[in-house]
Image (cartoon, helix red, strand yellow):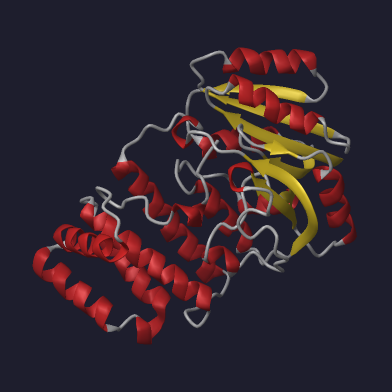
Length: 339
């Protein structure tokens, strides 16, 4: 049963006992009430589970804990979402913190602006100084089409109305770019945004591989990213965004880059699928340009893997980057993929 006025915060965590305490404290320090906090211990192998249990005993009216086998950030958030009772939903990564006025500012904004489904404010990235992180210092009216260029906020930034989250459906089982895909699913609902010009959260820099127990190799990351990109493109199409929109043309270039990277990693089916989607996203004129036509011809002659390897080598020559695979690509686009 949904509780009127209640804000539910969902924190997935893996092996972060000290940071978990700080994240939970930042929620408990909120000036706004009523709140509930759901910690999802995602198969931690250290003292994190015990710390979560202690937090529940210390704050029995406001903190609950779910223990589950390690499943990744998306499914951990989903476990929390399924039991959340709040009229408003807040997701929070275990190494980030909320600022004390966040809920008060954003709930108030949503209550006044009934046509808005999500509220966001400024987020500060501690390692980058005191200014707003990504595009959180800008007032943007709608999530789409801007979210095709990048996931321009962090997980801690938005506060969602409950019905928006329910309509978006369950989080995916992806370990990478699951957050970008989820927000694009929200965006496909035609969501208007409420903006408050205050800082509402802080993003902190810690080892991304420890955020959800993710120690998978490059191929797994690329497969997840390929799936996320396919889904994001489908969400944008459902929202009626076509190749005439600049952000869609930008996303077409993202798809083409990821197609090259997937091919170079031997993921030939993903490479071909992403390439076809890139041509569609670019539109009939740009999609029939010389770069697409030549790449298609090379793939027919050499195969998707060798064509991808050659293209990635050429990309690295042009960019001056000599990383082994270039597989991560523009990670800024999808956020940190963290728990």
